[in-house]
Image 1 (cartoon, rainbow, N blue to C red):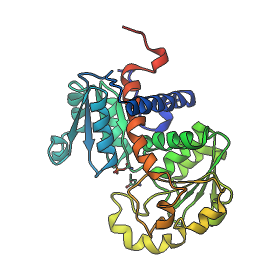
Image 2 (cartoon, protein in one colour):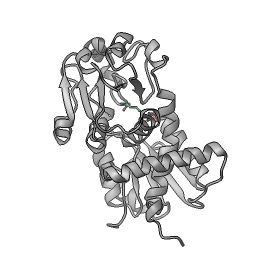
Image 3 (cartoon, rainbow, N blue to C red):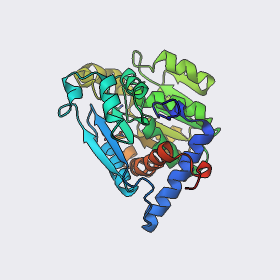
Image 4 (cartoon, rainbow, N blue to C red):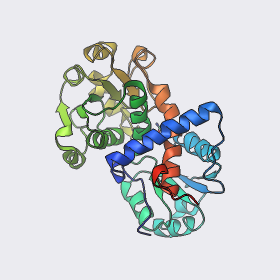
Length: 310
Ligand code: CP
Ligand code: NVA
């Protein structure tokens, strides 16, 4: 079991591996654009366990497996024994004897770690309360396509110190860029995760200071999945943290606007920003497909340049 590679956080890959993965994703996108059939995962199955809602993640993983010649299986807790209290360890042992890969979207990071410990096949984090590493693969791919290597650049995170913010912190270390973080008091990122990012992350109280001269401005919903009951309390606390046109004007003139989606116009972002010329949100969403195809292929078959031809 020790040889299996999981993708539970971005840190499961080295910087060189992440660059190679993104390079492969760009090649897969070009192949798809040319209409080239590429099916290295024929007869392979991905189990997709969703304990939270999803549009992009489900559609991109399921379509990605189909395009790679394989099959994806949607499993919800409502219809499986996981929802009736079957131990995670047992579910991991059983499911991983039947499928080739497992993708999980859930609440606790500890759940996917436990599943991975008892799995015979690679496990992918498709969002937990702590991280969303698959989204960062697509976001960095989009940045690379639009502007080249992120190394030495600066990103401003404006809004909630949530799972996306944590994965951007990991990305800052791994891709060598600076992350300016501006969150309302009480909604800062996890201090332990921030500590692992060291100097790569700088905190600001005023979002207008955080965005000054940056290359990318990124935000996310003010109330993540599982926090629906907190909406009333959160809205007033976040009022000054909407990404506005005035904020984008403080950033570099070439700055990109990013958002993992789903977005709430008039809340965390003004409509004129997300629907404006600096926004690359639709490319980020499309790149989930290409980046995850690269991830699936690499987890099962290894990196293309290190593969032993059969
Ligand atoms: N960005 C993202 O993960 O979207 P979904 O929740 O729709 O999967
Ligand atoms: N922070 C959001 C991301 C959704 C893709 C959430 O966890 O709901």
